[in-house]
Length: 459
Ligand SMILES: Cc1ncc(COP(=O)(O)O)c(C=O)c1O
Image (cartoon, rainbow, N blue to C red; front, side, top):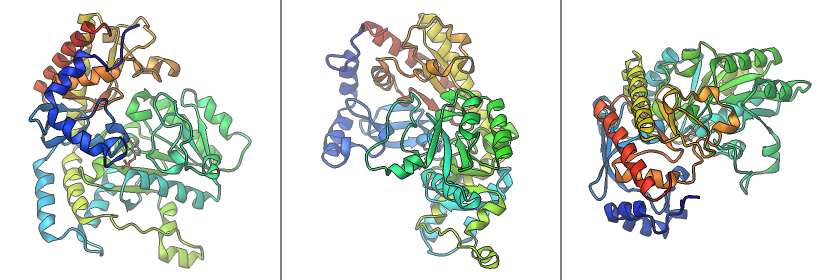
């Protein structure tokens, strides 16, 4: 059994040597924030890098080290860091004001772009985040159908609010965290995403389901991939049962295609949650969908039809600076070239990394779809060929362990030491700003990191 612990690791020593400034800041942060961090995905042992600035596909830490960045603002930056059109729009808006406490022109332009790009967006409501967009989608679905429960898929991630705070990890692990009311947990029906039968079984013979929500390309942007046929069948089943279908397109929206996964598949959900790319790297979110459902938020319709409207406030809904960034970003994305370029660069990364893995005789694989890539780290030592690995062809029990090799934490540190910042899954999202040089650097970083892991007996 390899020693995957971080104590006495040369990789950790090399990382520490390169990043003393980050270490110092992390020590101070531990006195301020739980675990010293401000987002669970930033948890890195022994500590994460502190980033001082970014540009295009790269970022630089406080010690001056340069990294190829695959966090991409947690998926928000399909244009890369500091895209000139987005930066100009933000700078321009800052001079005009950051918050008017009133309607403004840019929010209309922003909503109009969403209507134009996202096929099912008959109406739009802005929120401050993706978490909030899903929360609103659930409330709309319950109010519209008069039913109480929401079906969601084990491992699919929809933010951190109570309804979706459990059974949401790609490895399926993790129970209900403390502080979540039993009633909310009971209001959710969690089904396995590996067979459409599990959905049929969950729906048959009951009439209390308001909606089904999913990440339309599979959990964590396809780390556990779902194919189009699954989603198409889900659409047919929900229609048959009079149940609403919610696409969580917080990641896939404006990334898989300008119109998101729904445009790519040609399947229309009833409601769509949007965030991330939507607001060009600034905070924001939206719920979009059928006019008759979003009418539940409408004062005039409520008065005319005699129902109590759904209340919705939110200090930062359609914030002018986010709107400026969002409008600029969506205009860049509208033609489809940005999404295509990001996907093409990702395909090159997967191919180059798989060449290295095959060359080095490492039984891992780099897989994924669109502009996402993941490492299948093969903790069970299956016979695989990295160059022909197909995530869709594996069963879910295999895929849920994709990132489960005991040395993944060290692999990430080794990659950082070699100038590449991947996520802990491990994997990343790619932007249109990633160059062929980034592809080559990433492949070489994988080769060097494998060498470092081998030296420690991890591979
Ligand atoms: C698919 C999906 N839905 C919802 C969310 C939550 O969005 P936010 O972080 O803006 O609250 C995320 C965030 O990563 C996500 O990936």
